[in-house]
Amino acid sequence: MAAASPQAAMKILIVEDEAKTGDYLKQGLSESGFVVDLARDGVDGLHLALSETYDLAVLDVMLPRLDGWQLLEAMRKAGKDMPVLFLTARDQVSDRVKGLELGADDYLVKPFAFAELLARARTLLRRGKVKEAELLRVADLELDRLRRRVSRGGRRIDLTAKEFALLELLMRRQGEVLPRSLIASQVWDMNFDSDTNVIEVAVRRLRAKVDDDFEPKLIRTVRGMGYVLEVAEPE
Ligand code: CA
Image (tube, rainbow, N blue to C red):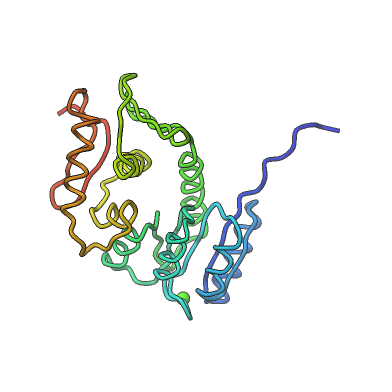
């Protein structure tokens, strides 16, 4: 018998109350080789999300009993950090921003082509795998998630727990501008309206440790938007 065992199939949770769309997605994703669970409302979706382990969740926004936002919030609070793709009929920037602030990873406006959804899902699943990597690296900055160590240019850097969490988030989402509200909710578990000065102070301290004595500078403030960690393009 061949020794090579096939890789375990990726598991996807779909929460969609429109029967036709839900069935169509379930069938399409199953045929594409994924293991798919389908919930028809937010409460059932949350139950599945918390009792099973999924590699990706595809959530409709308007759902009975618990809407997509509430479902996402409850999942994140429970420590479920799989990538989340939102489906919504409302093509509104405010929806998109709200979803991303709550920790959604991508957003698709209905109606969409299945091929588009499949492409987005695959991208998120790849990113999800990278997310689990123990070692995050940007330029000569390294963060070891398992041993909870950070070094730059081989020099050990001591961080507080919050600074570590902040740096981990910035490195995980490298190149993405992260709004203060997202940082607040993911690192401090606070709301957007809370005192965001906390974040500025923490970012300043983190920069002093990670960037001040080194080149290139990696953490950048994007005025009016948030923070990004990236190797800047030469001007
Ligand atoms: Ca719906």
